[in-house]
Each structure stands twice: as C-alpha cells, then as structure tokens.
Amino acid sequence: MTKKNKNEMSFLGHLEELRWHLLRAFGAIVVIAIAAFIFHDFIFDQIILAPKTPEFFTNRMFCAFSKIVNIPALCINSNPFNIINIRMAGQFTTHIIVSIMTGFILAFPYIFFEFWSFISPALYSKEKAHTRGAVFFGSLLFLLGVLFGFYVITPLSVHFLGSYSVSAQIENQINLTSYISTVASVTLASGVIFELPILVFFLTKIGLVTPSFLRKYRKHSIVAILLLSAIITPPDIFSQVLVCIPLIFLYEIGIYISKRILAKEKARLEED
Image (cartoon, rainbow, N blue to C red):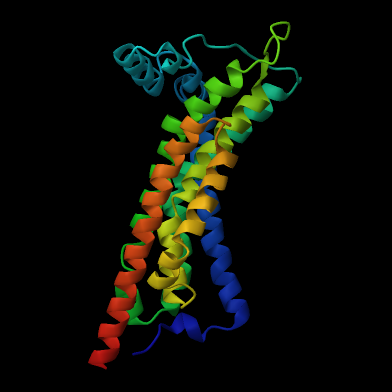
C-alpha cells in the first residue's frame, strides 16, 4: 500500500497546504457570521434570548409536566427577567461575538471536513476505510451536543441563576454580556463533550486506550463526569443528572467503539 504524494511534500509544503485549509475554514466562518450579523433580529429574539421566555419549547414542556405531577417548582422561566446593557459599545460588541459564534457552530461540519482533508492523505487505504464517516459522525455529535446544551442545560441554567436570590432586598439585573457568556459556554461545552466517542476512536487507533482500560476505570470516569457536569451546569442535582445521563451513555458507546476497532485490527492481522 502507498500513501498519497502529499506525504512526500516538504515541511514548508505541508505548512502551505495547512494554510489553505485554515483559510477556507475561516472563510466559511466569516460568510456565515456576516449572514448572522445581518439577520440579528432572528438570531437574538428567536434563538439567543428564547430560553428565558415561557414560550421556549423546553420551558413549555417542563411547565406541562409540572401540572401532571403537581409540582409547580418544575415550571421554569415562567417569569422572564429583563436583560440590561451597561456598556456604551456592549450591544455592538455582543452582536459581533454572537455572529462569530454562530458562524463557528454552523460551519463546524465544513471546518471538520477541512481538518480531515488535511490529515487523511497521510493514512493508508485500510486506515481510511476504518475512518470512513469520521466527518459525518464528528459533525453530528457536535451538533447534537450543541442542541442538548441549548435545549436542556441552558434553560435550566438561566432559570436557576436568573431567579436565585440571597436576599429579598437584592434585585437581579442581568447584564447582556453575562447572559450571552452563560448561554455560549454551556452550549459550546456540550458540543465539545459530545465528541467523546470520536476522541476514544482516535485514542484507540494510536494504542493509548483499550476496552479493558475503559471498563477498568468506568467508576473513575463516572466521578469525572459528575465533576464535569457540575462545572457546566447550575449547582442543582436535577440538571447535573440530566447532563450525566448522556455523558455516561457516550462513554459506553466509546467502549463499544474501542472494542470494534481492536476486533477489526485483530482480523486484519490474521488476514495478513
């Protein structure tokens, strides 16, 4: 088996190739960011600010469920708070930052494709066969993580942090920058965390992880997942459990993926 001619490039040749991949990825982000900047009314009113309103899908589902089980406390974000801006350029700066983040999220499949296009020529044909679909599944997991963070963790975080009070004499006045940073950090962190199976895949391919290793440290991983969920969620048990469930599920998927990879490697060695 032979590799493509790209592997015979000089170091500067590889850098030049990487530069063009990065430029194309950056260009995709800029194009989508410009579109997001233009359609800011929809981005802010219908997406960014939606989790704090009673009409948001998750809030409506929680309120409906609270009526069924007769627990009013489960009806979240029923009294939306107002968001204020205290900086002269605060709204304009936020507008730009949100546009860039929107560009990154929506362009992520293409960014992943450009990254994969750069490293894939260095793989052998059988390695490429085993990694077929990496761009699709990597992008899918990231977008699922973003949706999970936005529709599950964000409204819970907004409700808890926005309504929390240490004294009746203190009124919450949520700053625009603080609100945006909370929504963005939770959403993007969820997207990155959902890439766990992809990480396990590559760690198994290079021999750093095995199914037995993952099973052996399963209990330790659960503790790590609990700590991670405590960091990216508000400090209440309910939201932490909601985050832990998919993460534990993804960890088990990682074990299955690692097992499949080693089985294929073993079969390939037997054929050789």
